[in-house]
Length: 191
Ligand SMILES: CC(C)(COP(=O)(O)OP(=O)(O)OC[C@H]1O[C@@H](n2cnc3c(N)ncnc32)[C@H](O)[C@@H]1OP(=O)(O)O)[C@@H](O)C(=O)NCCC(=O)NCCS
Image (cartoon, rainbow, N blue to C red):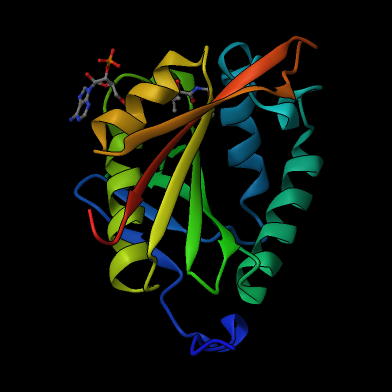
């Protein structure tokens, strides 16, 4: 038994705002801008993101965003696109995967377009989603997972104040076929 309300009946906003960013659920029509950012970032995305191999076409990305819009409505996953506030430029993708609404427990993922790497946009987005998850969604646990070789990603988790809980050795096959160790970072509502 649980006292948690059904996920699909939960009401919460579909966008967040930070100092420099709008984070919002994908909508039909976002595919072209998203795909342009993905193509620009192929070299950084392809080693880590299975969905960037092979590179998607604009139609592929449009389809993915339409599916994400449906997932958001179903509360199966809460994907977000990141737009720069000042000019609407597509910055990257992030979002909260709903790992267990019963806890509730979420996992945050992210990528940034290469021309905007190194400016703190992803840390800003992770901090906003962390606050949203704890304050609005009632999260008790949030995870960030990354390949142990993905030092830029691990630095985001550390910069956002997450604690390294463990290393799952030989946990997945990386995109290049090698065995990868996965680092698990987490924050709990009690931290
Ligand atoms: C992982 C990834 C999102 C990290 O991007 P990033 O630009 O390093 O992360 P941020 O946007 O938080 O920027 C942080 C960097 O900007 C710098 N920075 C500049 N201004 C900043 C600000 N206002 N606030 C915070 N950091 C700032 C930081 O010093 C840091 O640089 P450093 O790591 O060299 O010290 C990016 O490398 C990426 O998209 N990789 C490919 C996809 C991927 O691997 N995703 C993760 C899968 S687990």
